Image 1 (cartoon, rainbow, N blue to C red):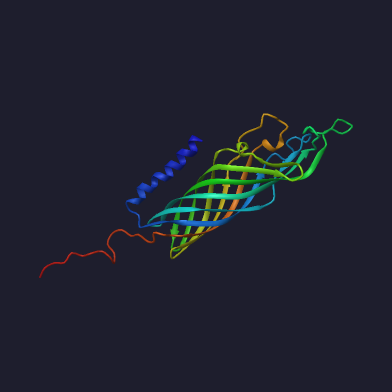
Image 2 (cartoon, one colour):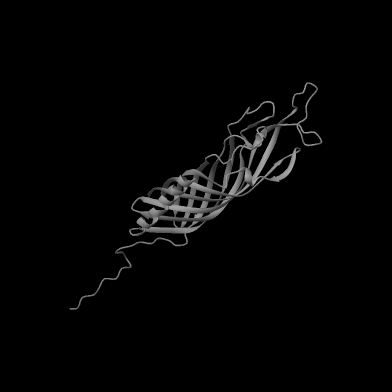
Length: 248
Protein backbone atom coordinates (compact mmCIF):
# COMPACT_ATOMS: atom_id res chain seq x y z
CA UNK A 1 0.00 0.00 0.00
CA UNK A 2 2.96 2.31 0.60
CA UNK A 3 4.00 1.84 -3.02
CA UNK A 4 0.48 2.73 -4.14
CA UNK A 5 0.56 5.96 -2.14
CA UNK A 6 3.99 6.83 -3.58
CA UNK A 7 2.67 6.44 -7.14
CA UNK A 8 -0.20 8.83 -6.41
CA UNK A 9 2.11 11.36 -4.74
CA UNK A 10 4.50 11.24 -7.70
CA UNK A 11 1.74 12.03 -10.15
CA UNK A 12 0.34 14.80 -7.93
CA UNK A 13 3.76 16.46 -7.65
CA UNK A 14 3.78 16.94 -11.42
CA UNK A 15 0.93 19.46 -10.98
CA UNK A 16 3.37 21.94 -9.47
CA UNK A 17 5.88 21.44 -12.29
CA UNK A 18 3.26 22.03 -14.97
CA UNK A 19 1.71 24.99 -13.19
CA UNK A 20 4.61 27.27 -14.02
CA UNK A 21 4.04 26.93 -17.76
CA UNK A 22 0.44 25.80 -17.89
CA UNK A 23 -1.44 26.97 -20.97
CA UNK A 24 -4.78 25.88 -19.61
CA UNK A 25 -6.26 24.92 -16.27
CA UNK A 26 -9.62 23.16 -16.09
CA UNK A 27 -11.72 22.45 -13.02
CA UNK A 28 -15.36 21.58 -12.50
CA UNK A 29 -18.03 19.03 -11.66
CA UNK A 30 -18.79 15.91 -13.66
CA UNK A 31 -21.17 12.96 -13.37
CA UNK A 32 -21.86 9.76 -15.22
CA UNK A 33 -23.02 6.18 -15.30
CA UNK A 34 -20.94 3.02 -15.07
CA UNK A 35 -21.23 -0.65 -15.86
CA UNK A 36 -19.95 -3.08 -13.22
CA UNK A 37 -18.51 -6.57 -13.70
CA UNK A 38 -17.44 -8.49 -10.60
CA UNK A 39 -14.74 -11.07 -11.30
CA UNK A 40 -13.77 -14.13 -9.27
CA UNK A 41 -10.99 -16.63 -9.84
CA UNK A 42 -12.16 -19.24 -7.34
CA UNK A 43 -14.75 -21.14 -9.35
CA UNK A 44 -14.69 -24.71 -7.96
CA UNK A 45 -12.70 -23.48 -4.93
CA UNK A 46 -14.19 -26.17 -2.71
CA UNK A 47 -16.76 -28.40 -4.37
CA UNK A 48 -17.94 -29.83 -1.05
CA UNK A 49 -18.84 -26.41 0.35
CA UNK A 50 -19.86 -24.56 -2.80
CA UNK A 51 -18.25 -22.29 -5.34
CA UNK A 52 -18.34 -18.73 -6.65
CA UNK A 53 -18.21 -17.61 -10.27
CA UNK A 54 -18.05 -14.33 -12.19
CA UNK A 55 -21.26 -12.37 -12.04
CA UNK A 56 -23.38 -10.74 -14.72
CA UNK A 57 -23.06 -7.05 -15.60
CA UNK A 58 -24.68 -4.50 -13.31
CA UNK A 59 -24.77 -0.71 -13.15
CA UNK A 60 -24.09 2.33 -10.98
CA UNK A 61 -23.21 5.99 -11.11
CA UNK A 62 -20.51 8.38 -10.01
CA UNK A 63 -20.27 12.12 -9.44
CA UNK A 64 -17.47 14.42 -8.36
CA UNK A 65 -14.92 16.97 -9.55
CA UNK A 66 -12.08 16.96 -12.05
CA UNK A 67 -8.89 19.05 -12.18
CA UNK A 68 -6.72 19.14 -15.27
CA UNK A 69 -3.71 21.11 -16.50
CA UNK A 70 -2.34 21.27 -20.01
CA UNK A 71 1.16 22.20 -21.16
CA UNK A 72 1.66 22.01 -24.93
CA UNK A 73 -0.02 18.71 -25.91
CA UNK A 74 0.53 17.10 -22.50
CA UNK A 75 -2.09 16.93 -19.77
CA UNK A 76 -2.20 15.77 -16.19
CA UNK A 77 -5.12 15.80 -13.84
CA UNK A 78 -6.96 14.24 -10.96
CA UNK A 79 -10.53 13.48 -10.02
CA UNK A 80 -12.35 13.02 -6.73
CA UNK A 81 -15.45 10.88 -7.22
CA UNK A 82 -18.24 9.38 -5.14
CA UNK A 83 -19.34 6.04 -6.57
CA UNK A 84 -22.55 4.14 -5.88
CA UNK A 85 -23.01 0.85 -7.71
CA UNK A 86 -24.17 -2.74 -7.49
CA UNK A 87 -22.26 -5.89 -8.31
CA UNK A 88 -23.17 -9.55 -8.19
CA UNK A 89 -21.69 -13.03 -8.22
CA UNK A 90 -23.28 -16.36 -9.04
CA UNK A 91 -22.67 -18.71 -6.12
CA UNK A 92 -23.35 -22.27 -5.01
CA UNK A 93 -23.69 -22.51 -1.24
CA UNK A 94 -24.52 -25.17 1.38
CA UNK A 95 -28.13 -25.60 2.35
CA UNK A 96 -28.45 -24.55 6.00
CA UNK A 97 -30.35 -26.32 8.77
CA UNK A 98 -32.36 -24.57 11.50
CA UNK A 99 -29.13 -23.88 13.41
CA UNK A 100 -27.51 -22.18 10.42
CA UNK A 101 -25.12 -25.07 9.80
CA UNK A 102 -24.54 -26.93 6.48
CA UNK A 103 -27.14 -29.64 6.05
CA UNK A 104 -26.05 -33.18 5.15
CA UNK A 105 -27.86 -35.77 3.09
CA UNK A 106 -28.26 -39.42 4.10
CA UNK A 107 -24.73 -40.15 2.81
CA UNK A 108 -23.19 -37.40 4.94
CA UNK A 109 -22.53 -35.13 1.92
CA UNK A 110 -23.19 -31.40 2.16
CA UNK A 111 -26.40 -30.43 0.34
CA UNK A 112 -25.79 -27.53 -2.04
CA UNK A 113 -28.09 -24.84 -3.45
CA UNK A 114 -27.17 -23.99 -7.03
CA UNK A 115 -27.22 -20.64 -8.84
CA UNK A 116 -27.77 -18.23 -5.97
CA UNK A 117 -27.20 -14.54 -6.71
CA UNK A 118 -24.94 -12.84 -4.19
CA UNK A 119 -25.67 -9.14 -4.73
CA UNK A 120 -23.52 -6.31 -3.35
CA UNK A 121 -24.10 -2.59 -2.99
CA UNK A 122 -20.92 -0.48 -2.87
CA UNK A 123 -20.33 3.13 -1.85
CA UNK A 124 -16.77 4.30 -2.54
CA UNK A 125 -14.60 7.38 -2.86
CA UNK A 126 -12.20 7.13 -5.79
CA UNK A 127 -9.29 9.34 -6.90
CA UNK A 128 -7.88 8.73 -10.39
CA UNK A 129 -4.65 10.54 -11.35
CA UNK A 130 -4.42 10.69 -15.14
CA UNK A 131 -1.69 11.78 -17.55
CA UNK A 132 -2.14 12.01 -21.29
CA UNK A 133 -2.15 13.88 -24.58
CA UNK A 134 -4.55 16.47 -26.00
CA UNK A 135 -4.79 16.85 -29.75
CA UNK A 136 -7.37 19.47 -30.63
CA UNK A 137 -10.61 18.59 -28.85
CA UNK A 138 -9.51 14.97 -28.27
CA UNK A 139 -7.86 13.76 -25.05
CA UNK A 140 -6.15 10.43 -24.38
CA UNK A 141 -5.35 9.66 -20.74
CA UNK A 142 -4.37 6.85 -18.38
CA UNK A 143 -3.14 6.45 -14.84
CA UNK A 144 -3.58 4.84 -11.41
CA UNK A 145 -6.65 5.08 -9.20
CA UNK A 146 -6.93 4.92 -5.43
CA UNK A 147 -10.26 3.77 -3.99
CA UNK A 148 -11.51 4.11 -0.42
CA UNK A 149 -14.35 1.76 0.60
CA UNK A 150 -17.10 3.57 2.50
CA UNK A 151 -19.77 0.89 2.80
CA UNK A 152 -20.63 -2.52 1.33
CA UNK A 153 -23.90 -4.42 1.84
CA UNK A 154 -24.68 -7.97 0.64
CA UNK A 155 -27.93 -9.84 0.16
CA UNK A 156 -28.50 -13.37 -1.10
CA UNK A 157 -32.20 -13.69 -1.87
CA UNK A 158 -33.78 -16.63 -0.10
CA UNK A 159 -30.57 -17.40 1.76
CA UNK A 160 -29.48 -14.54 4.05
CA UNK A 161 -30.82 -11.07 4.80
CA UNK A 162 -29.01 -7.86 3.90
CA UNK A 163 -25.71 -7.83 5.78
CA UNK A 164 -23.03 -5.18 6.19
CA UNK A 165 -19.81 -6.72 4.81
CA UNK A 166 -17.55 -3.65 4.54
CA UNK A 167 -14.80 -5.42 6.49
CA UNK A 168 -14.69 -8.22 3.91
CA UNK A 169 -13.19 -5.74 1.42
CA UNK A 170 -9.99 -3.70 1.53
CA UNK A 171 -10.46 -0.21 2.92
CA UNK A 172 -8.03 1.16 0.28
CA UNK A 173 -7.01 -0.51 -2.97
CA UNK A 174 -5.26 0.36 -6.20
CA UNK A 175 -6.49 0.19 -9.78
CA UNK A 176 -6.10 1.98 -13.09
CA UNK A 177 -8.08 3.93 -15.67
CA UNK A 178 -7.63 4.60 -19.38
CA UNK A 179 -9.89 6.53 -21.65
CA UNK A 180 -10.82 8.89 -24.43
CA UNK A 181 -12.28 12.36 -23.90
CA UNK A 182 -13.68 15.20 -25.98
CA UNK A 183 -13.69 18.89 -25.03
CA UNK A 184 -16.34 21.05 -26.66
CA UNK A 185 -16.23 24.57 -25.32
CA UNK A 186 -16.46 24.23 -21.54
CA UNK A 187 -18.15 20.85 -21.73
CA UNK A 188 -16.33 17.53 -21.71
CA UNK A 189 -17.43 13.99 -22.58
CA UNK A 190 -15.34 11.07 -21.34
CA UNK A 191 -15.35 7.34 -22.07
CA UNK A 192 -13.17 5.34 -19.66
CA UNK A 193 -12.25 1.78 -18.79
CA UNK A 194 -11.66 1.28 -15.06
CA UNK A 195 -10.23 -1.84 -13.39
CA UNK A 196 -9.05 -2.72 -9.90
CA UNK A 197 -6.57 -4.98 -8.20
CA UNK A 198 -7.80 -7.53 -5.65
CA UNK A 199 -10.47 -5.80 -3.57
CA UNK A 200 -11.00 -8.59 -1.04
CA UNK A 201 -9.61 -7.97 2.46
CA UNK A 202 -8.20 -11.49 2.83
CA UNK A 203 -9.09 -15.10 3.45
CA UNK A 204 -11.65 -15.63 6.17
CA UNK A 205 -10.59 -17.68 9.20
CA UNK A 206 -13.20 -20.25 8.18
CA UNK A 207 -11.75 -22.07 5.12
CA UNK A 208 -15.24 -23.22 4.12
CA UNK A 209 -16.62 -19.68 3.81
CA UNK A 210 -16.59 -19.52 0.02
CA UNK A 211 -17.84 -15.91 -0.11
CA UNK A 212 -14.81 -14.57 1.74
CA UNK A 213 -12.00 -16.34 -0.09
CA UNK A 214 -10.06 -15.91 -3.30
CA UNK A 215 -8.96 -12.97 -5.41
CA UNK A 216 -11.69 -10.68 -6.68
CA UNK A 217 -11.48 -7.74 -9.03
CA UNK A 218 -13.93 -5.29 -10.55
CA UNK A 219 -13.98 -3.78 -14.03
CA UNK A 220 -16.18 -0.95 -15.32
CA UNK A 221 -16.92 1.18 -18.33
CA UNK A 222 -17.72 4.79 -17.42
CA UNK A 223 -19.40 7.54 -19.44
CA UNK A 224 -19.35 11.00 -17.84
CA UNK A 225 -20.13 14.61 -18.73
CA UNK A 226 -18.27 17.53 -17.14
CA UNK A 227 -18.33 21.32 -17.13
CA UNK A 228 -15.22 23.49 -16.81
CA UNK A 229 -16.09 26.37 -14.47
CA UNK A 230 -12.70 28.06 -14.93
CA UNK A 231 -12.47 28.20 -18.68
CA UNK A 232 -9.32 28.78 -20.69
CA UNK A 233 -6.42 30.37 -18.87
CA UNK A 234 -3.47 31.38 -21.03
CA UNK A 235 -0.22 32.84 -19.92
CA UNK A 236 2.16 35.07 -21.79
CA UNK A 237 1.39 37.70 -24.38
CA UNK A 238 -2.03 37.54 -25.91
CA UNK A 239 -4.93 39.60 -27.06
CA UNK A 240 -5.53 40.97 -23.58
CA UNK A 241 -1.91 41.86 -22.87
CA UNK A 242 -1.09 45.54 -22.44
CA UNK A 243 1.67 47.05 -24.57
CA UNK A 244 3.40 49.99 -22.92
CA UNK A 245 2.93 53.17 -24.94
CA UNK A 246 5.91 55.18 -26.08
CA UNK A 247 5.93 58.91 -26.21
CA UNK A 248 6.31 60.84 -29.47
